[in-house]
Image 1 (tube, rainbow, N blue to C red):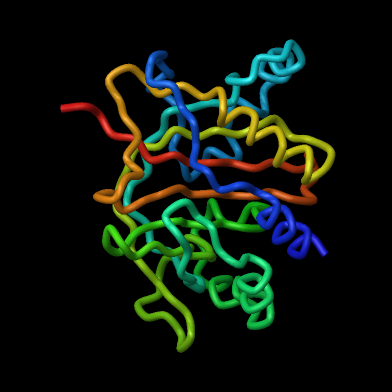
Image 2 (tube, rainbow, N blue to C red):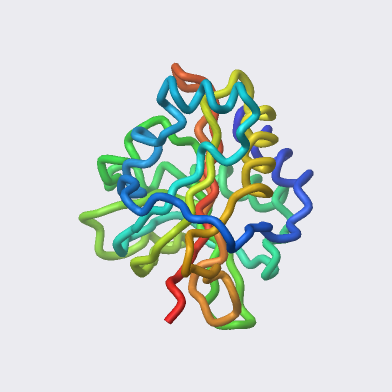
Length: 222
């Protein structure tokens, strides 16, 4: 049921890109992105209090992710991430798309994360969404699946506090993305010459509730 809801939410999104200001700074001493789901400021009492005071950027972190191996299924999409997500998720869950990665999950992906989507480019004209999990100890993807090693990158991680429903979590992260500001001296790295377009994670039905994360690729200005 939660997978169907996730696909429905994706279908309602207008994939018009992520609007980020380039004027303000974000702390550079944030935790590794692999542990961001567990250690995000969204879990702290202070951050929850800030959210309650309508501070939309209190869940923004600058983080560094080393290269990682990712196993799942890959589907073509447009550069603005438009795609037929109903058809995509029907296919993905029909073949138990996450099941193939279960024996090889890295420790951080054993947490209750439901969906991980890596939007990326293989060339300036070829855009894809790779749905799966971070893995280790596997050298070849099973037939019909796709495995890729993604490069190290800095990201602006935008999330929310834990919220009661999936729709609230999605609405919250959308609002926070609109207000997120890039660190001083950085620009977005999601253009035609970059590998990443966006990484998205959705946590659902956990003991704490629901939460979405958007990882926006960024790079330091030379």
